[in-house]
Image 1 (cartoon, each protein chain N blue to C red):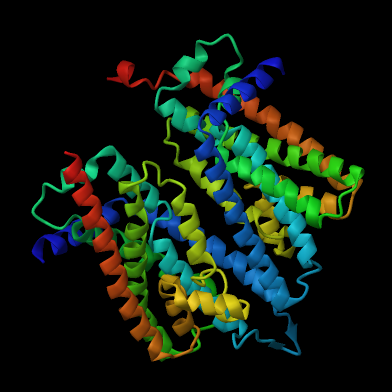
Image 2: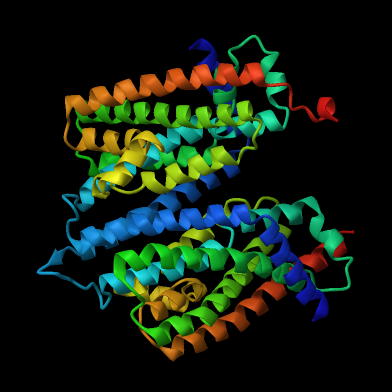
Length: 260
Length: 256
C-alpha cells in the first residue's frame, strides 16, 4: 500500500503547489451556484414569507443539494477520459506498466490526491455562496454523513471514468466519450436536478445506473434526507465499479502485451 | 470574402475525409444538447413559468445558444486558441501567408462537434420557434451577430494574453465563463449579475439579447446588438494587430 499512499501524498502536494487551477475550478463552482440560486429562487417564489417545495425539496434543501453535487462533480476533471485515452493511444500507459505496481491503482491514488483539494475548495465556496441565500444546512447529521459519501462519490466517479476510458485500448479515438459520460452524471446522476424531480421512468433508469452514486447520494444527504441505504448502495457500486475498471484495464494491458 | 469562403470550403473537405468520426461527433453533440433540452423540460414541467419565461422561451434560447456556438466554435474553432497558437509557434506559418492572418486563423479549421450544434440549433428552432420566413431571417441575423460578439471576445482575450506574455488560460477561463452563463435566461438575474454579463463577460450580447429579439422583437435591442457586434469586431481586429506587433515567434526551434 505504501507506493499508493506516497502517490496520493505527492499528488496532494503538487495540487497545493498549483492551487490556482483548483481556485479557478472553485470560482466556476461559485458561479454555477449563484446562477442556480437565482434560478430556483425564481422557480419557488416567496408567498407570505414562505417558499413552496418541489418533490419534497425546499429552497434551502435544493441549494445545499446543489452545493454538494457541484463540489463532488467539480472535483473530477471533466476531460479526464480524453486525457486517459490520449495516454493509452500515445503509449504512456505502456511505460507505466513497467513499474512494479498496479497501473490503475497507482493512477487512482494520484487522481484522488489531486481531487481532494479541488473538492475541499468547492465545498468551501459552496458554504460561502449558499449560506447567505439559504441559511445553514437542513440537517447536521446529513451534513456529517455527506462528508465520507462525497469522498466515496469521487472514488466511484474516477473508477467509472477509467472504465469508460479503457475503450481507448480498442478504439483509437475515445475523445468524444467524455462528453457523453459527463451528461450521464448531469441528468441520471442528479447533478443538475434531484432524481426525484425526473419523470418516473427516468428515475427508475437512474437508480439502476451507477451515476447516482457520483452526485445524487451526497446531495440527497446534504439536503437533509437521511437514507442509510444510499451509503450501502454507494459502497456496493464502489466495489462493482472497481471490478469493472480493473477488468477493463487488465484486458487492455494484455492486448498491449500481445501486440508487442 | 473569397478567401474566407475558400478557407471554409477546404476545412469542410478535410472533415469529409474522416466521414465516420465527423458523423459520430455530430451525434455526440446532438445528444449533449438533448440533455439540456430534457433538463429545461423537466425544470419548467415542475416550476411552471419562471420570471416570465416558459418552456418554449427557453427552447428559443437553447436554439440560439446552439446556433451561436455552432457558428463561433464550429466555423472559427481557433478563436479560443489564438494565445495557444502563439505559444506553440503556429502563428509563424500563418504570418508568412499572403492572406489576412486573423481571417486565416479563424476559418482554417471546422469543428465537427460544433457542426452538431448548428444542426441541433436550427432544427430546434424549426420545431419549437414558430418559424416564418421573417422569423427565420431574424434568427439567422441575430445568431450571426451573437457569434461575431463571441468570436471577437475570444480573440480579444487571446490577443491580450499574447500582448501580456501570459499563457492561454485567460481565454479558456473567458470561454468557460461565457459557456456557463449563456445557457440561462439572463433576465432572471439580478442587476449586479446583469452588469457583469454586459460589460465583463458579454453573454448578454451573445445569447441574451439575440434570444429576446427573436422572442419579442424590439428595434432598440436589435440596434444595440448590431452596435455591439461592430464594436467588438473592431476591438478584436485592433487588439489582434497590437498583439502581433508584440509577438516575437513562439516557435520551439527559435526559442530553444
